[in-house]
Image (spheres, rainbow, N blue to C red):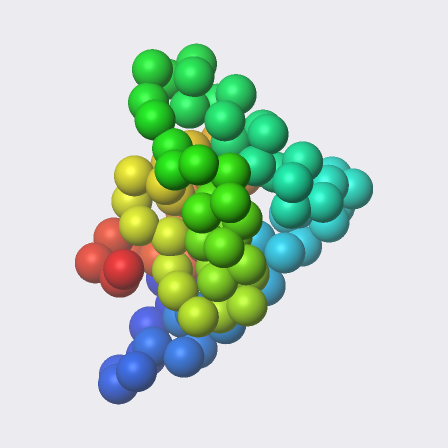
Length: 95
């Protein structure tokens, strides 16, 4: 089910943040461990990611509801966490 809100999108960002935090914690992973998993997934897909320091900042912003992962990173993030992009409740036009 897609999360929708007219206006600033605070509800969307909060929903995505909660899903990401829960998925990471369910695996018992720290943010650095998630970075490692994302790097592995990116390599499998022959894709590139930002340096770990930048990725750490991005993950923090996603998990704190300040940003929504863009489609490029969302695909890698969801694969690393073993969740479907649909689990985030996004319809594709949010970034």
